[in-house]
Length: 379
Length: 162
Image (cartoon, rainbow over all chains, first blue to last red; front, side):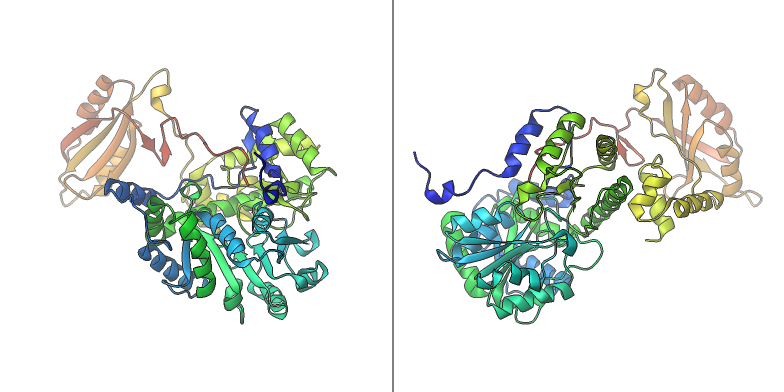
């Protein structure tokens, strides 16, 4: 059977090849994992178990349980000053990934151009292509610490786009942007009438300054959709739960697709998420503290090794420059000779191809051992 | 969190962290961390460093007991006086004054049940202020000082993921 042309346009993900290499080896230490090493907080897991015991296994409202949307609205208001209406402006999705896919499909017309800030999470480009849109790559640069700037957006041709999608704190770079820095992006979006998809899945994992959402800047709320979820901050990746916040017309359009394709996000996960927002601040704070210590350990060690690595301030990634010219070759050799897996920047699109993504979502003992092996390998 | 508190927290997580590793994790330098640890030790905040051992895996398994002690005080004797006397015995591993139905909770360790029983009945019980002892022998330890003794959970995440 012949796959559709738009599917053929999207190759298999670069990370897949590396995953297969790593899977063939025993006893590797992986710094290649894009999810927390912690389990979801016990109170959240317990709430999921209790909901199953009580037989709460039916669909929920398309937009998600109202109780959950209320908790999301409250949390977003108190944490990030984001004010969204429970009934009209919040959509609970099966992971933030579903939300992004819905936004592309609901808001991109065939031939529309979407500016994608890179390096980035692997699903943005395919999402645009599946929606029959055109991608305009905006490659962020090491000298800007992988942040978006007004000039960069202009130089890379984003003025002609209809939409801009980016993620801060960023996967794979660990870069963050302050409110002041985002103001430049907002100015560009307003000037060129761009819709902005702001992936804020790592918002809770910002270590050196408070997270600011672009939707809180003047004139931005009406043109922005914010994506967040429970995967990273609450270590709930496998429960597949995220949410989108946006103006009513956008959320209604996204929900139109969602109701026909997904119906509703997983019910059990929604019960876990309600509890996570209500009672798991301490567990989140503890994980945040541990990530931050590991981050400082990794950055210090790279500095001592003489590896050029900008000061990543968010998520759980460091993004050092690759000591060799070819990041793919380096990552393969490192894996084969030392059993340490890192992901070459090439897997995340333009801009980061001569870098490596090093995840510190790994216990300190393994992290130290892996860093020791990297140090011996490059000497 | 003050830098001293953070150092204590890290040492309680793993007392074998090197000074360098603590410095790296806290964004400090080795001189500052080294001086802080010296100070914590000199001030008696840090009283010592010991390994957490799963005794069941030792060739010579030790016997451990939690002992409730009841005390009757008089005008000349305080809890502190009694506690000091009991704590001197090397077999006594920990001693706490607690609220509730008894006064002291003592943990003691010995080579055998007979030896430990003899110790409690011949050395501890005869202390004049002690009116009653209730001994609970530890049968299985599941967790100690925050460390679980099970096989641990395997990391079942995909080895590489986006």
